[in-house]
Image 1: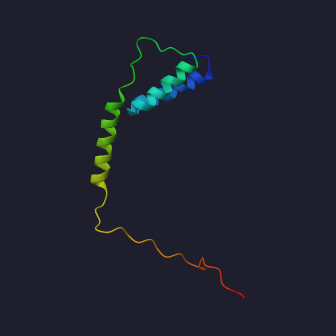
Image 2 (image 1 turned 90 degrees about the horizontal axis):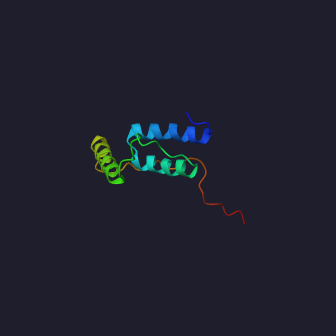
Image 3 (image 1 turned 90 degrees about the vertical axis):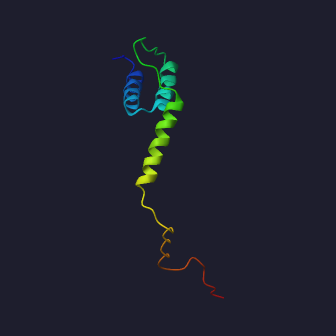
Length: 91
C-alpha cells in the first residue's frame, strides 16, 4: 500500500470501479493518480476503452426500459393543497 493517503484512496476507488466495469471512471481515476505522481506497475490492467463502456451502458438502459411498466398515459400530478399561490386583493 502506498504511503500517500490520497494515492491509497484513489487506488481503492479504482479497484472498485474496475470491478463494476466503469472504464470511463477508471480512466478518470488514472488521470488523478498520474497527477499525484503514481505510475502503475506494468502488471496492472489498463482501462477498457469508452466504446466498450458505452455498449454496457446501452445494454443496461435497454434492460431497464424493458423492465419498466408500460402505461398508455403518464399519471397526472395531484393538485396542490392549501392556499392558492395567487395573492388576494385586499384593497
